[in-house]
Amino acid sequence: MQASAHHYEEARQLLDEVDGLAGKRAASEPVLALHAALARGMLHSQRFEIEPMLRDYAAADALQRQAYPDDASLAYAIRSQLVDAHLRQGDVDAAETVARQMLADPLLGEPRIGKAARANAHVQLARVLRRRDKPEEALAEAETAAPVLESVLGARHPRTLDNLSVL
Image (cartoon, rainbow, N blue to C red; front, side, top):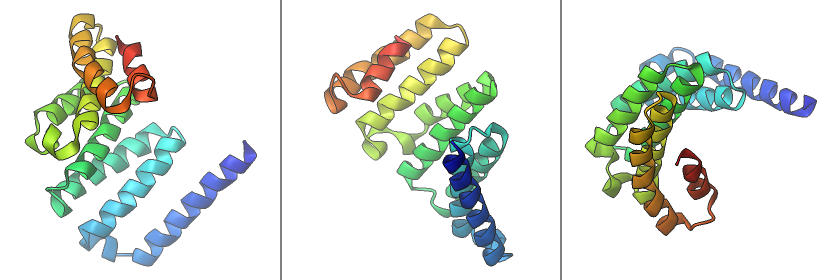
């Protein structure tokens, strides 16, 4: 455990050092700022630091839309993290908003992000709806994802099995 804490602190120090080297340049270059926000968001996610995780992923979302507006994979990854952060924070309203926006966004359609990722977006919404005590809606979302995950990943894949826990 102490070794892990040391590695996290080392990562935080390296991010601070890189931020210092980037200086004002990070504020004027969205790509640089995006990568910094993603790196910090990942660090905070691994440390279960929800407030800073949410802040950094929200910044990354805005920067992705500016720097790489057509990058569906990156948009999906960031927004999935936002749903997770909102749920961890207990903000089910915000989590549901982001989850529904993901499913409604043509950029995040199956042709752009793939069957498994699209099914996972349904699983995320199912989790949100379950937390909202809407079991019928949660079940419908999970059932949408189940056959896709099973066919793409296999019946015994961890994500397929995880989806079954939503059912």
